[in-house]
Amino acid sequence: MMNWDRSQTIALAKTTCAHCHGYGLRPGRYDREVPCNCVFRAIFRVCYLRFRDCTNRDRHLSRVRLEFCNGKDNRLTYGRKVEEYIADFCLVSRNALSPLEYDIFRFHYLLGADWKLCCWRLVVDRGTFFHIIYKIEQKLGRVFRELEPHSLFPLDEYFGGTMSNDRPSRTVAMVPKRAPARVLRPPVGLSAA
Ligand SMILES: [Zn+2]
Image 1 (tube, rainbow, N blue to C red):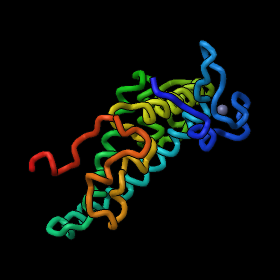
Image 2 (cartoon, rainbow, N blue to C red):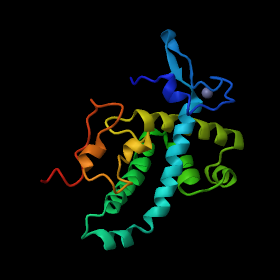
Image 3 (cartoon, helix red, strand yellow):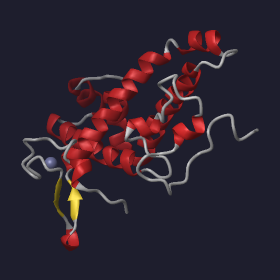
Image 4 (cartoon, protein in one colour):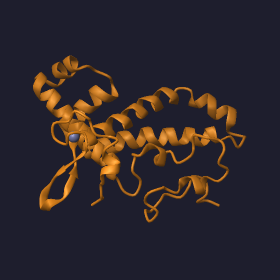
């Protein structure tokens, strides 16, 4: 089980949260402090915003690939990471959610249907819909952060330096800052060398 401390949660917690009062941790079992659900929802929302950003960007990827596939431009690397992120976001969510949760996730977050359309299509009432939305965001926020060996959050670790062109070595850029012992995927392209 991963360790959470206040320095991680306080930046994500909702300042007006009635459960953690903006600290992001609350008392759990065995006198341990556990992350508050508002922290998980915040993580979900950060990841979801990046997902939407990536799907918008992906429309332009084929052009980018044509322009840079013969060069050494890091934008191509970033493009691959974007594609991987989109796939991971969808797959991890599908694996983590129950069938009803996944239906709501798909309609609302992936296809952009509002609550009225979702309620009509899935035959649930408004209260149930928002209750499940809360559960989805909490569940996925935790999974996105705790996923091994390769968490989606924090995003700067996931995207590991691929956004800028000033780092010549991708191997160095892939090393995570906080968890050096974690097993990593080999950098793309190096495994066949
Ligand atoms: Zn809270």
